[in-house]
Length: 324
Image (cartoon, rainbow, N blue to C red; front, side):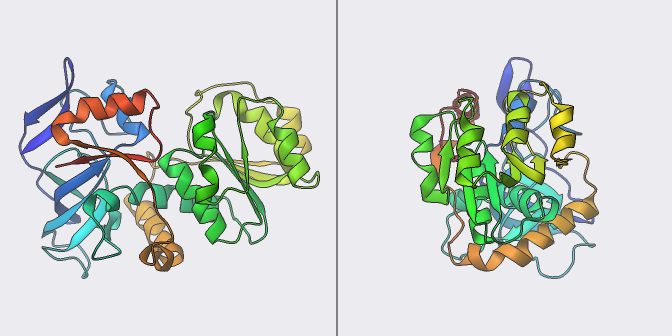
């Protein structure tokens, strides 16, 4: 099969053996796949958990048709079904993944190029906002790095789950101008040292109940300044750096719950539970078209290097997609 792999000179299109699904896995004929920040990590030669390394097929998110189901896959999936999912080896003509990562395409009329944008954003932000963030109706919520695909989904989920105030951040003025389309009541520039004061003013001095942080690095202390006493901060991503200053006294003073999450250390059972919880809360809204992500640009699979370059340049708004 044709696939985008990590070669000695970078990302290359090669013919590689198709995956052999395990008893718990579903084999899918991929029609479209989408890019995620973790793909850049693997394309640079670094590992992302157990995925990556020389010769690895890149890609973590895709949509297509079921080809085969393993003997241990529960009823409900069969050959020919239109599905979307996540897992390793997504930049290819075929991919195999655990059944718990596979979801039906929610609308029969939905194009695969649209369906592939959804799984990781839905799973990540429901887990961050609802499961770990314990979002309650009426609370003030912020998504740091809101113009990414995952961030845009976070704004919409926060609004859907009843947040009283939704704040989004972006360092790009054109992207900030669009965040209201996806549910933001207040938009800030995370590079502006005065943004915590704007948030405190908007909340009557109380601060944010919940921050989902995709930036980390230099915003950790600003997040805590903007947080309410007993607020929660869920660390999802590190677009702005893996390390930074941390005011331990402010953390203690506000009694902030600081929670780190990643899929890299999740068991299959945990991922299945995350997917099931997301479907329970979000599937009706998804089927009605109330949760969506914009497709920034569509490439062919043999243009994988160009697609990754666009993401690396941070030139996109929403999701970058490739057709297979």
